[in-house]
Image (cartoon, rainbow, N blue to C red; front, side):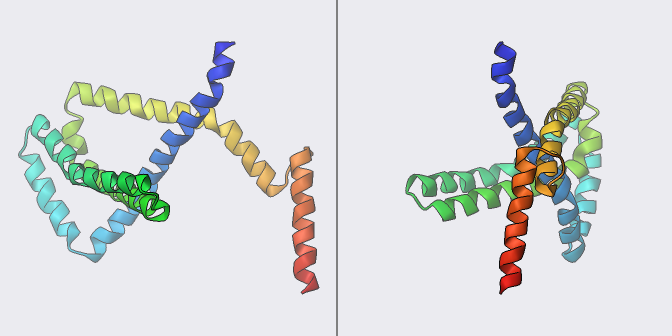
Amino acid sequence: MMRRLLQPIWVLLAVIFLIEAWLWDHLEPIVARVVALIPLRAFKQWLSDRVDTLSPAMTLIVFIVPVIPLFPLKLVGLWLMMHEYWLSAIVTIIFAKLVGVGVTAFIFDVTRSKLLEMPWFERLYEFIMDLRAKAAALVEPTKRRILEILRGDGGGWSSRMLRLIQRFRKSVHEAR
């Protein structure tokens, strides 16, 4: 009984987790393109050379520190939200989130091998990867159903309604 009540909460948490993972996966190539456009490739190599000389514990500091300056930006977003500057708040928070994920992906790419030398970090990393796989499996049926509805597949009421709406939109556009 309790499990059924908590199921929507678990699905929501899984969706949030997967959005984070999706951002991570999709911002990493964007960061790579930015690195190619500006001299970040040289900086990445320089940073990688420096990280190779550090202990795993010091590498953890290198991994954590670059994200700290973004925290005040998120506070600015919250301040904007409290003063009902909704659009500015949302843009600021999303910008801080995207930059944070991008910077974290960049730094993690440089520091990953050193960080994984620490047994506790390796266990944490494996736990997060397992959690990501479980979240994907939990969300997959819902995702599949949403895609079926959007494509108009299946024989349910929602797919019939969607096809009806699509026909109506088509007839409106053809009438013009």
